[in-house]
Image 1 (spheres, rainbow, N blue to C red):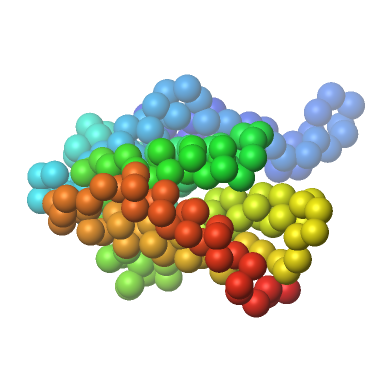
Image 2: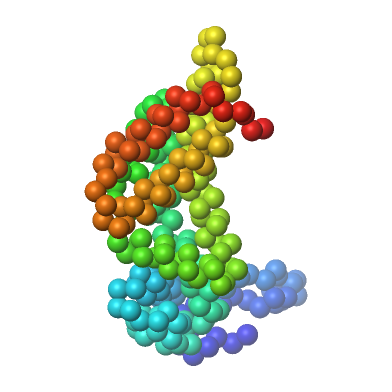
Length: 233
């Protein structure tokens, strides 16, 4: 297919193209140029700005294009529709809230050491624009199944961080001489995730809460009572 005028991608040989000697080469996917990557990044940045609601502008591909300074046609070259843009934003914000938590839990250390890193992250206030984007994404997920699936996958990944934290505790308890009972890492991790989300909601309203003390009490309180819960296989 011929390249659209002004399009910022490089196209490869078409499917079934013949090379020297008449052999048929396998089709290659189009390569996005550096300019194309920059255009895509500008569109995602503009989409983030509109989702954050700073200027109270409706979230449409036309408004995203205008804010990014690209043509509406170019926006649809990179993203099929508004939902594609929203799903791209869901992935784009992952390094700002999920990745640091995954790294904090995965970094070597005892349960207590990893828990303290988790406490430090959860005690940090969420940036206002990120909080507004999360609210907007939840709203869109109510009416758009593709957005709902993408958002749910991200929150499942978020909750998995806390489950992995308590799996460290489970391994430590299992290795302790004379320790009996098990640790239901799934239930404990899900409980901590739910409590962390609730704390974020409280703080978003401006309530004065000692987040570090609250989160530390939650983590160590759950750990202390870990062997009192029935283990879910």
